[in-house]
Image (cartoon, rainbow, N blue to C red; front, top):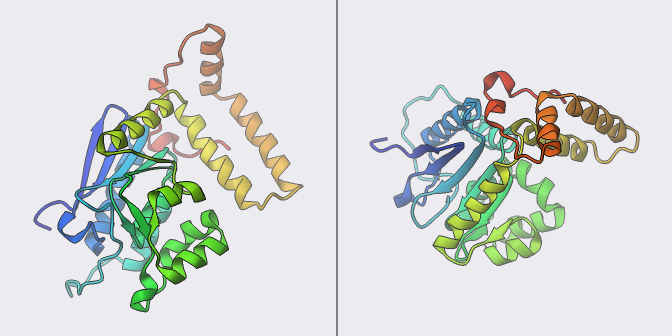
Length: 270
């Protein structure tokens, strides 16, 4: 790669990961996937990073996996495993993630969007899973998409390969917000960043884990109440909770600077 296909930048507590292959619609090559995972892990392990934004450079957010013939040079990385790692690492990231969807997302690009907690979308963007038009199936992205969309919508979109507009995505419920234009896209992303910066890093990590566990247990009438009770007990005794409650009692804004999540704090107490 003569130019980095994935860019990384940090402003304050916000890290931005940019897919940077605009001439190829930010299609994901094998080396690009590996670089994305490495950069994502860097952001996750950095205690000064509290929010991660993922976006694309150019007209497209991401057009999915690059299906053109690749270099025959042997790779030590299993491309299927690497791609699964990309989706799982992003979807299970302990820090809040925002997809700044600057343009159309296809195939694996849809998987990246669904792996993020917030999806702020340009009005001209659309979503499509056209794999079946090429005799393929969207197997690797199904793990993050089907649980959120449900069987009916997943089959509809995956069988037809239809283009789902940003507005339709919002109506269906997998888009957080649709911007009016480029400037509005950045403003809406910043609005959510500002909201997230008001929250405790550990609490946000544990909220994500709580929701995943409660949802993953299928609403079991016996297991869920026990888990929730234990989670509450561990949370209320944390230093972060004490700081937040103390600030509330003093009518002050809590400062979360000392509660950043680095490698030593990534594992939840829940």
